[in-house]
Image: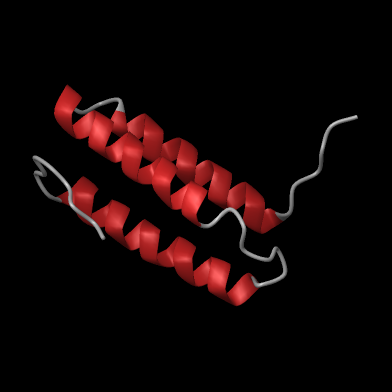
Length: 81
């Protein structure tokens, strides 16, 4: 029996997938930085309460904005903190 995901979980997984797809189009030093950053964000926030919708949506919007900045500019390396 397949596990059902909420709409928010699906949005997060699709964003993560798009982020990794974009990372694979970049040369190696930047690719590994992007993959490490994406994995770090997921790991750091994996223990958030699932019912904290507003905070999760805020984090998702913030990461989407960062991702859009990376996509629109000619980035050589990243250093988000």
